[in-house]
Structure formats: C-alpha cells, structure tokens
Length: 486
Image 1 (spheres, helix red, strand yellow):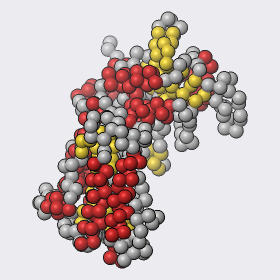
Image 2 (tube, helix red, strand yellow):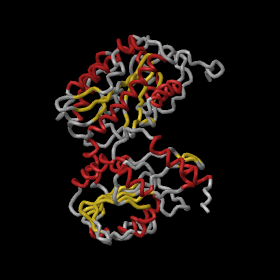
Image 3 (spheres, helix red, strand yellow):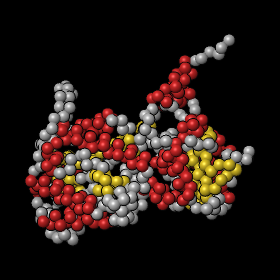
C-alpha cells in the first residue's frame, strides 16, 4: 500500500516545485558570491577566520515582524536572504575529521514544512549547496557541536554584537543561540552571563579589522553590481518623471509617495532602499522627513522628493525638488538654480583622484557665495545651517553604502546632493522662509571621469517645468468618495 500523502505535504511539494519558475532570472550568480568570498580571503590577515552573522528578525508589533532584510555584508558574500545563519571564511585550508579540506562553511536554518507554509520557502543546507555554491553547508543546529578550535587562529574577525537580537525560546538554533554558542567557543568576555567577565583564552578577538576590508571590497562595484544599480536608478527616475507629470495642488504628501512607490513596484523593485522622504513646503527643511502626512499641498509650495528603489538588493538615491503648481516662483528659482550650480561645480571635478572633501567644498563654496549675493548671509564665511550636511556618499547594498571615503576611484558609485534649507523664522528676509531645495543624482566613477546615471530625471528649471506640462496616465485615477481630503 502506498503511504498517505497529506494535504500539507502536497502543498509543500507545490511550493517547492514553483520555486524555480516563480523567481526572476537576474539575481546575481553563485559565481559572483564565490568570487566575493575569495576576494575577502585574499585580504584577511594570516592565520585568521572571519565570522559573519545574519541580521536578526525585528519585531514590528505583537506577533507581526518587519519584512526581513538580510545583513548587507552577509548577502554580499553569500546571496543568502534568510535569518538565523552564520558564515565562517578561513584564510587557510581547514581539514575535517574525514580528511576533507575546506576554507568556508555556512550554517543555515533548516527546511520546515509547517513553517514554510506560513512564512515562505527555505533553501536549507541542500538548497544552499545547489543554489549558492557552498560545498560545506549545514543546518544551524549543527554549529553547537561543530568541532572547531578558535584558539588556534591568530585572529578572529567579526563585527561586535548589537543588543537587538531577541531569543525565540522555541528555537534553540536561532540567531540568539548561534551568537551565544559562538561566544562560548571563543571565550567571549560576557559568555554565559551578561555581567560575568571572562578573560579570553587567547587575545585573538578582533572587532575592528573587518570594517576596512569590507569597505574596500564593497566600495568598488563589479560589472554585475553596476547593472543592478543602473536598473534601480532607471526605475527611480521613472518615478520622479511620473510624479512631475501627475502632481497637482491639493494632493497629499502620501499620495505623491504612493505614485513613486507604485512605479517602483510596476518595474519589479522589491522595496524602497530607505524610508521615502516627501516633504512639501517647510517639511522639506527636515532632512530625513518620513511622516509624509500633509493632507493637502498648497499651490505655492515646493515639494522635495528623496526616494530610491531597491532592486535585487541594490538601491538608488535620487532627490528632485519641484513646484507643485508647475512653475517656480522667482525666489524658488533663485535658490534652486544656486543648488544646481553647486552640484554642477562638483560634477566638474568628479573623477578618480579627487577627494570626497574636495567634492563637498566645491558645493559649499558656490552655496556660500550665492547666499551672500542673495542677502541671506552677510559674509561667505558665516557659519550657518542652511546647508547642514555633506554631499557625497557611496550607494549599493546600502543607501549609505560601505566604501572608503578618501579619494574617488574607478568603479565607485556615489551621489552628489547639495541642498539649501531655509526654515520659518530664519534670520533672513521672510520671502525665503519655507524654501527647501535638494538635488541629488547618482554617478559611476569611470577611468577618467563619471557617468551620470540619473540624468533621465529632469534637473534644470526649464526641463522640470516642461515635464510638468506633460499629461499623466494617472490624471483620471480618481474615486470621488475616497478623494476627500482630511
């Protein structure tokens, strides 16, 4: 007699069968991740091991967790997107008890038919071997009894632990327990009890050595990464263009955010790379304004829109500031063109060998001179908060991505984002109050200059105003009973 196949097992079989055909075909390959681990191994100090933990699951409220996002370093080295995992990368070949040699090992959460029915498919150790190219992959429960003598290494490199890892009492192999087991194996000072101080058996724990190694690795993008960032940027530009065509006085900040993020989803971006910033009028003066609550944007306001699509883990970072009524006022135009001029001065020196500080100073010089000419500053050397931030950072797996911040190098992907923000009650003529302008673009540093990746989103006053005259596919998308403003 054949065994009875339960409905649950049938469902799991269907889920597993659908896995291949349901996935996009432009994820990075297992060869990419293997090469990244090899590059890391080349940079590790002699006789060392690098230890990486997956990101924790973070609780949103009650029994609802935030959508899981893998630690970018872990993802960069493995392509693994699930929690409760541990990666060891060895500088030298290791020999197992059965004589097998290896130089890396990963511990991952096991397959679980019931949990997968609720929270989605898992790769398990077999899937990690097949899809991600690991020869040494084990269920995370194995790590507790995994025979490794950490005292033999000259250095154990890892990122120090945070305090936001929760213990799931029903899972003895969750991230909380993996960290605790690791601490025990290396005689970490608080192993066994948070207030107990234990002298390490050997002073080989290194919580600072990985930072510069990963910065230098991730700061220079491979061709495969560049293409994914390009796609994220193109999608983000499409969102900016659609909003320029669709925006009208009376719309809410949330509605504008929704148009951007609809475009992101339409073109298969999994998420936003950071909380969307959509600030109208004086809200634009809040640099990381994320509430986006304003129910009705007035006819005379500017709206600052800083959003980036995340595509296959890589994020864009683009800001445009536009007049809600389609036409810049004289004061808005003067501030806008000053910010644009600052950005273009920085672009002139954007090439390998230029320092990040030089890029910033190019924008700062233009802005200070312009503010003095407008009467907002009395002297170019006055200290002020109208331009309170830097202007250049790396982009990639993080919106403020890892990378060295000394000089620009070929293969870096960066932003240039000068801005001027004049809050209410600033010590200047009231006609400037409430004007906030930031223009942010994404660039690839090339052999002798740069490639302007986000040029598809209009930047000049003329081009912005022309785009805002174009019709939008969303013009007729109105439900009268839902369109009443609160």
